[in-house]
Each structure stands twice: as structure tokens, then as C-alpha cells.
Picture 1 (tube, rainbow, N blue to C red):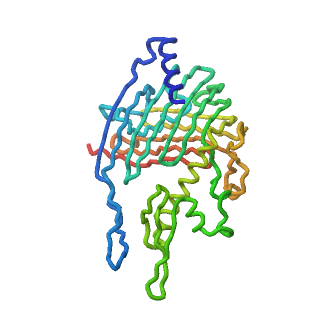
Picture 2 (cartoon, helix red, strand yellow; picture 1 turned 90 degrees about the vertical axis):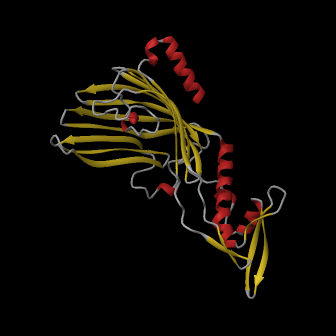
Length: 354
């Protein structure tokens, strides 16, 4: 899908006009820094105290991207260069500040506290007076959220308000259930049997009246000790094995597809003293196209205050300058797709000493 998006950009750039890349910015950046020092952890093995505190390698963020997104009146380019780490709330607004094509292509390779992941965000949007079309690919590995979206809507502007209605086609991995629950019933099968299925075996050891188990990883053909007690094995290895099992089984199910109704409303007002920009996209009805499309009726969602079938993507930017010195701002976004919340929120004041 990323290749399709790049191809779409290329076709548009050559078919419509030479202005497709005008005022766009290509950027590459890298940053490194010291990682967090973890809390000390120790274990006793063969009557010897061993320090097993995790030592994280340095954090990094390597980014490459290309963007053409018109800034709103309340936005200022406070930095000389783009580096791809900017968290611009307005990028997530469904209605941009300029008609025509806008796009963003951003890939970031990140290591944070020893965890390595890749975050990707690609979108291509076309805005006219009466409709909007948007395609997007998101892969946020930090929260395990990945999807492709194609959105087409009719829009109507009434004063400072903008209303839209249309349909959204989305593709995503299987979400909403864990295969381990179908594979293992702890009330019937002991965890040691499941551990063996995952490639671990145990050997008992005793010290006086105390008995415990050494645990070995035999999945590679060799026997490698990974834990000296069952508690250590459960804490550091068994959970990871279950997680790897779930990921492997979900991957076998492939990509799921669904159609959703989307209703949108936005408001934008800007003056030199204050500004307000808000939007809300609601997806209230969904039609799954595959066997493992997201099930919004599962019992696990029954206790949710807002029904699982009501999905949304919302944002708010508000700022006010009380005088030349004092100002207040609040901005944030909140998205809930497939019961995976993704949000950011900022609030603060500025005071300029004159």
C-alpha cells in the first residue's frame, strides 16, 4: 500500500500540473540521546547476587519524509528546518487550509528505552469546494495500530462551519481478539505443557524442603538456560512467548477489510486575539468484508461507556491572547479505531516580559 501511495503521488504529479511539488519540503534528520536508567534488578544464583538490571543502549530517531501541508493562520513555523518530529495537530484535520492536493510521507526509525519500532504516516488529500478525497497509510508500532484508509466525502461549507458525509474503506490486521484464548484453557491444561509447546522445558531442583525449577530454551535444538526459578521464567519469558504466539497466529489471518459510514463536522475561526479550530469525524456504522473483520459486538466491549461501534477522530485547537504579554492555549487530538485509543493533549500559558 505504501508503494501504491507513492505511485499515486507520482501519477498526480505528472498528470495534473508541475505545481504538485511546489512549496513542498523534503527532509532527512537523525537524533540520538541518552536512554532512561532503569530501576535496579537482581537475582540470586548459586548463592551469588547477580545484577540483571537492564542497560539500555542510546535512544535514536532517524526520519525521512516529504510534506506539503498548508499551515493554518494560527500556526507559525517556529523552526528553521523540518526534521519530521513535529507533532502538528492540524495535520490530522480532515479539512485543510488550502484547496487542491496536500500530502505527507514520513518514516521514522525509533529506539526508545531499548524498544525498536518503525512509525510511518503517509497521506494524500484532495480538497475542493464540494468534496474531499483522502488516502492514508498509518503504521504506529508503538501502540500496535496499522491501517490503510480511503475516504471520499461530499462537503458543505456554512459560514465558519464545514460539514461532510461519505464512506471510508479501511484495511487492517485482525484486531479485537487473542488467539491464545482459543489455544489454551489454563483450567484444563497446565502452563508447563503450553511452555513446552513454545519450546521451553523445566528441570526440578531442591534446597532442603524448597523445590523449584530451572527453565531451558530448546527451540533452537540446543538447551539454553533462561531462568533459575519458575517465577523468573513467568516474569521474563512466558509472557513474551504468548505475545509471539498471538502475533504469529494473527498474521496468518491476513488483512481485514471493512466499509464505514463517516459523518464530519469542523469549525474554524481566527482573529488576531483568539482562534478556535475543532473537528469531529464519527464512524457510527460498519460493514465487515472478511471473516475476521473487527467484531464490535463482543462481550468484552459491553462495559464501555460509548459503544464500541461508535468510532471517532477528533481534534481541538484553541488560543487566546489576553494582551501583548499573556496568552493561553489548549490543543489535542483523540482517535478511537477498533478500541485502540490514540491521543495527545497540550495545555499551557505564555507570558512575555516586555
